[in-house]
Length: 137
View 1 (cartoon, rainbow, N blue to C red):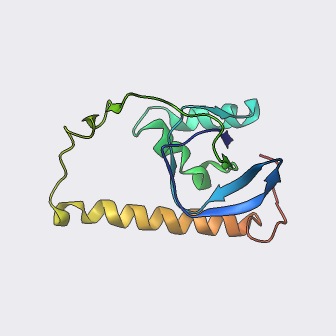
View 2 (view 1 turned 30 degrees about the vertical axis):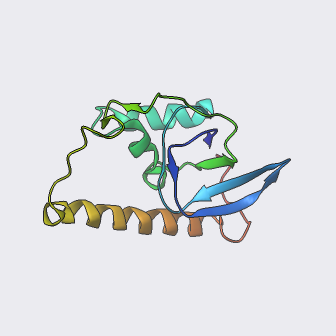
């Protein structure tokens, strides 16, 4: 899967260059699904595992380590989504965003840290840090 835009990307790992663009894998989350390319084979593998829907699509895609596919981003992103600063999740300008108290968010922090570790381990296993890729996704 190749992301052509993103809301947020964290901890990019360079995989090379394509013209003026950097091809990156990510240890951190790469959220947003405004524009991307994905192989039919990857969709056929991914879709049955995403049903029933239990989390946002971009969050499930960030669990590429569970679904065994490569997730890249092309940066600087060639596509930009203008949402007018309106989100279904946080409202206008994040004005409707209400966070739980910090101690109620501890389980979420644990899950996020575990996902960083899982992404890091998966990328190391497939050779993303050495340039010796072991899959064709």
